[in-house]
Length: 93
Image (cartoon, rainbow, N blue to C red; front, side, top):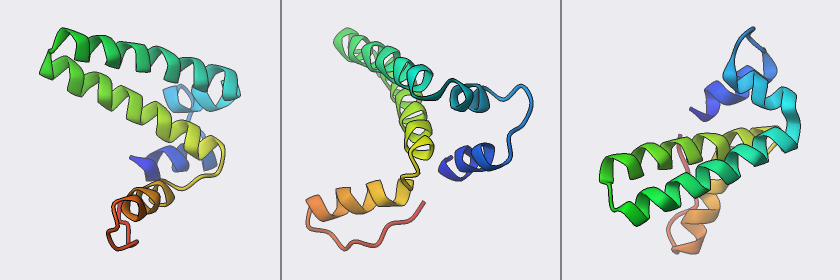
């Protein structure tokens, strides 16, 4: 997923939702992260596993768009997570 998102940033495709987010910049991307975060919280509150999974996927997607927008590689996030749990720092997609 991260590679597809970065690919859209480097080679925009007409009509791509991801490109619309990039074109909107931080305002559009961060607004979507806020919306998706709230939807994820509500899904958890409702204790609906399918909805939780769907909203988590939406949130992770939009976070990955924000990371790409700011030039932060997804693998770097995985490295930080691994370091926090004391695991080897090798990350894969």
